[in-house]
Image (tube, rainbow over all chains, first blue to last red):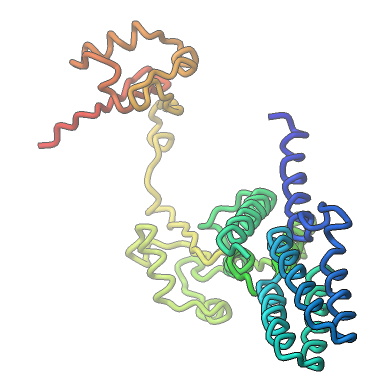
Length: 121
Length: 230
C-alpha cells in the first residue's frame, strides 16, 4: 500500500467520526427542515397565549410528527436523556392542552425549547 | 431513538479509533508493558467502552477524552525517545537486586519487591539455586533479568569450537492443502519435486497435507490432516 494511502485512511476515518459525533447527519439536512421544530414551538406558543386550544393541539401534533422525523438525524450525536426529555415534554403538553392549563403548557413548551437548544448546540 | 443502531455506530467509532491509537502508539508487546502503560491501556479501553454503549451521554466528550489520553501518552513516548533523563524520570530505571551473588535488601525495599517475588521470577527462568546467580536486575516492566555466574553459564558450540550451520527460517510450501506458489519459487523448488517428496512419504495428494515447510538446509517438515497418534 502506498504510504500516503496508509496516512489518508485514518485521517479520513477520524474526520468522518468527528462529523458523525458533531451532528453531521442533522446539519446536512436542509435549513427549512432544521428550523421546523422551533417554528412549530413558536406557533404552539402563540396559540397558547391566545388560548386557541384547538389550534394549539393541531400544531402540537405537527410538532410531534416533525420531532419523530428529526430523531433519526440527531440520535448519533445527542444524549438519550435529552431525546427522552423532548418526548416527555410533548406528552405532558398533550395533557396540559387537554386540560386547558396555560401555565403548565407554557412551562412545558419552554422546557422543550431548552432541550432542543441543548440538542442542536 | 433506535438504541441498537446508535450503539452499532458508536461501537464502530470506538473500535476504529482504538485501532488507530494502537497503531500510532507502536508495537510495544503486552509482556513489555510497565505498570503505568497497563493502567493507561485499561483507562483508554474503559473510555472507549463508555463511548460505545453509554447512551445517556453524548459520544463526543468520551471521544475527546480518548484523544486527550492518546495525545498525552504519545507526547510522553516522544519525550522518552528524545531525552534520556526524561525517560529515566518517567519510565524509571532497572534496579539491581542481586550483585555478585549478594542479595541487595535495600534496593528490593525501594522498589517494593519481596524476596519471594525475586525467587519466583528466578524459578520462572529455570534458576532454582541462588548460588548460581551472578546478577539479577528488576527491569522497569517488573521482570527479572538474570546473569548466571560464569561457571554455571551453559557452554555454546563456540565454546566447544564446534562448527554450526545457520538454521534460518522455514518457508511454508503447503498450508491447508493448498500449495503456496510464491514460496515454492522463493525456496527454489517446484511442484513436481514437492509431489515426489510427498509420494516418498506415502502421501498421495497435496490436499491431504495440512502444513509443509522447508528449512534453509532443504529439510522438509510435513504434517497431514490424518494424525496417527498411538
